[in-house]
Amino acid sequence: FSDPILTRHSLEAVKELAGKFKEETGRMPVFMEVCGSHTMAFAKTGIKTGLKDCVKLIAGPGCPVCVTDQKSIDAMIQLSEGNGRILCTFGDMMRVPGSKFTLMKAKTEGKDIRVVYSPLDSVKIAEENPDKEVIFLGIGFETTIPILALAIREAELKKLKNYSMWMTTKLVEPVLRALLDSGDVKLDGFLLPGHVSVVLGKQNYSYLSEEYNISGVITGFEPVQLLSGIYKLLQLLLEKKTDILNDYTYLVKDHGNPAAQRLMEKYFEPFDEIWRGMSAIPKSGLVLKEKYAQFDAKKKFTVSTGEPRKTKCRCGEIIRGLITPEECVLFGKSCSPSNPIGPCMVSAEGTCAAHYQYMREE
Ligand code: SF4
Image 1: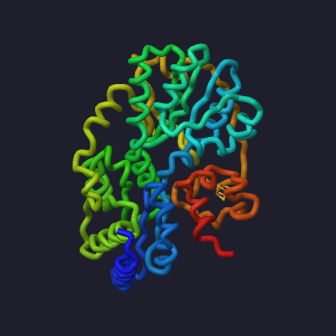
Image 2: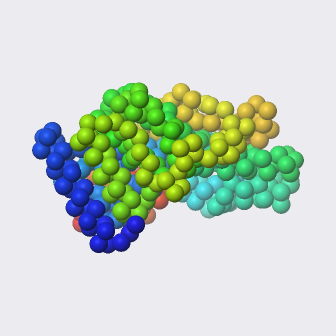
Image 3: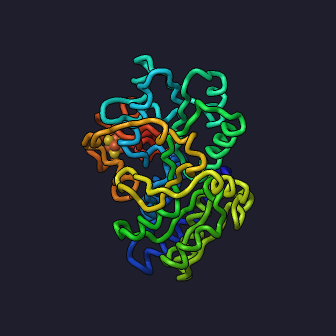
């Protein structure tokens, strides 16, 4: 799927179909890639730049670090300040600025904040430190949420009293509905996330074609897979059809992963989660059910955060596909990967980081 000759042929085939669409409509097709890993892959492979004159690719809200609002970051930093606590999180979260500073700065000031690769590592840390409260900052979409459930199950099995999770998880369907309902951005189709779809399955997206009359193609992350996804969306547009296609069949099944879905249902329930730049979206996140309240850090600890600090960062608009990073006055000037002002420049899946690394004009 990354063969250079096949990639070049696929690119030409996409350009040809996009040309036909432009002849018929007088405009370029506009597709949104929902997933942050797709955003990075489109930039890194040069596909986004290669297609810039014939297909408009807009990054969507699928980067979990980028959509975490500043208030949640402030709460996490405040949580780290209590005595006898160990805070565990994923690496990218360390550098996201809160109102005053980052978790990284809190760590350099002596707070016990640890980067883990899996939530299950944080359970192990709790087991090894019975005299400390261990809190895991649980962010992520449906790809990660089943693993959060596994961590809670592990803590439950081990009867841990010193383990809890601060959850700011996000769900794909409510945010796509919110984007489409807002009418802020006009789209001709979605490139649907490969990883999330492994859990959700193809059928989960039927609302897009049935209720919103818009197509989606589930696709992988290699150049030929990315181009195949765009090609299929263009075919559907030219044939004036609306459908959900699965172009990642060897990993994504029609009904997804029922075991992972059952795990999520067992431990979590829907919650009106706050998204950066979008405020609260009904039932767009998951929190622990009351039965598991002993593992809920939001119930275990009191945190009081003020209003988020106003900055010129426009991540909120970027994750809704309203602007490109180059339209932010801070891009490449005061904001860069070595000095990120917003999460879209911090995250390995962030749109600003992708543009800075692979698409910036010197
Ligand atoms: Fe925010 Fe920096 Fe992106 Fe501007 S360039 S939107 S400040 S992350």
